[in-house]
Length: 137
Image (tube, rainbow, N blue to C red; front, side):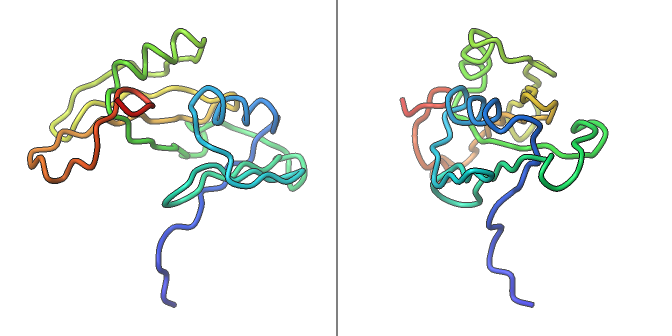
């Protein structure tokens, strides 16, 4: 086996339309490809793919039950959390500062944990661009 990279992370969701609103309109992930029962979000790296759970099996549990967490890198976790609070998104765990950076956790419409991580770049060459929240500064 010669795996090159992660292609996508697939989330089985209760309501595809609600999840599209959350990940596309609220979080801001661009829709790369959309079909009746499948949506790929993102542009580079691994895609986040949404698929209705009812087409394959009953949707049960949440991230806490099944161990799934979706993680996003952000440029400013505080402004991201503030923006999401204004949009009515549930904050599961407010900002915590760790050696590697700042992190907060929110919930998506299905109760999946979504981690927002702002890394601390000890070497400024590691930083690839300036971002404020979810959008370029």
